[in-house]
Length: 324
Image (cartoon, rainbow, N blue to C red):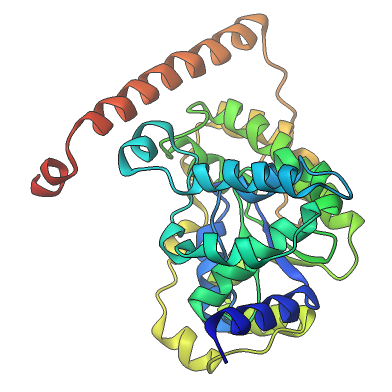
């Protein structure tokens, strides 16, 4: 049987199974859970910054071959950016090497819907990897939540939460997004709202707490597999024994200044209580007019500095960075 026929069979088999969608705001531990899903359950876990959903959502219920072709070419152009383009503009997938040869398969496919285009790209990535099921982790998926029924009608969602205060600390230490804790709290809350609504609206999803994954990985992973009907591709106990989990990533919120902690807990009050994290402070922080002006200003200045630092690092040749 030819490789083309093999892929067509694989594509049909994946269309009969759900696509596993990892929902988590950046900084919550999605890279860790994505890695575990790939290694333990042999999911493909394409990291594409929502490029596939963004391209596919433009298609109507019954699109013409020309419309599908335009959407595919736009997607392909984003995925296959050159190293220089990726360095300065982003918007690419780190897994693009596993999508090589996709053009030939696209020419043989009969795609007329948004779901068909997304299924094709995700399945091809899984096929090249040798994965047994399709999974995705897209950091910007919150911005396309309204299109998921259109693009991924057959999906199972995994909602990942992290103690929202630790999440704040994680975000302010990343090379993206807010640099002030209070701004980070609002940033997290806005994005998490979309994921929470998606999780609550879908049956058959599963919630994972980052802290449970770190403290009791074997039970958490096994429970996730049972809940989502995923068969482990390895011995979970052996895998956990040989994998490095970092307990130091829990409880970092204690380094926050008292005012910032109280303010963040005020913003994220409902989320902290609903997901079992509780609060360390008892009173709500009501910012003064000065604080209401000062904090956004500090965050804006910090983001400008952050952007300048990123731009400067991109101007340094890769070999020069390696030689440091």
